Amino acid sequence: MLEDEGCGISQPRQADVSGGARGDAAKDKLIVALDTADAGKALELARRLRGLLGWVKVGMTLYYAEGPQIVRELRSLGFKVFVDLKLNDIPHQVDGACRTLTRIGADMFTVHAGGGRAMLEAAMAATAVAAQKVRATPPKVVAVTVLTSLDDAALGEIGIGRTTAEQVEVLATLARDAGCDGVVCSPNEASVMRELLGADALVVTPGIRPTGEAAGDQARTATPAEALAAGASHLVVGRPVTGAESPVEAAKAILKEMSS
Image (tube, rainbow, N blue to C red):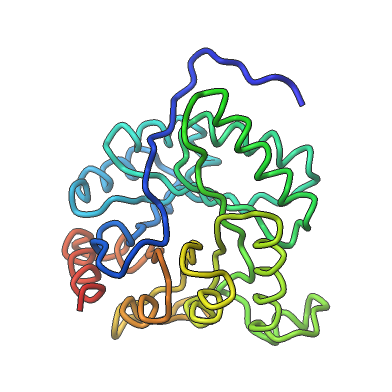
């Protein structure tokens, strides 16, 4: 692996992204996914949500369209940024990607537990080295287990004979043993993950749908209150906020439900 260049590096904040106590403010547990390919639209929405919540998510759609600069711009607005690229490649490639995400200031990012132990260990080691080079606290690395759009039948179609719950537990155990900071799973598995991984682990749950909201293409969902009660540390919400007539009011309603 080539040595990291030291110039022009954006140093990550020393953000608190721990699992935290139940008394933590709901705004520090809610992550709104800015799933658009347009930086202008993403930044406009972020400005409207500024001060209401602490986290935004940059996924594949936005990152591939706009590149690392969008992470820097969102951080300049005061947000902690969760970069969700689900890194899954040979260890050498993931090593390099983790160094880059650390340098540009991601506060948390995803790898895929399906990449195997060697890849996960390479991710953790590269993140620590890169953070040391820029004199910053390493971002949190969370491992994706089973996508929330998949169910038992879908796993069977790709040759996996386990149930989704069984597969999540296998991959979460692998991620834990490789030193990852936590996992991404559906809210349905959050309570098992909390028991398996311990009180300090991150349990990040997409597939969150406010009470009365349609599931869409998500197969394993829960309400915000249900997910928190099950042990989730962070909730990822996209379309229920970004697709709402008033994203600010939608976010406020979710925060209220989380605090109930």
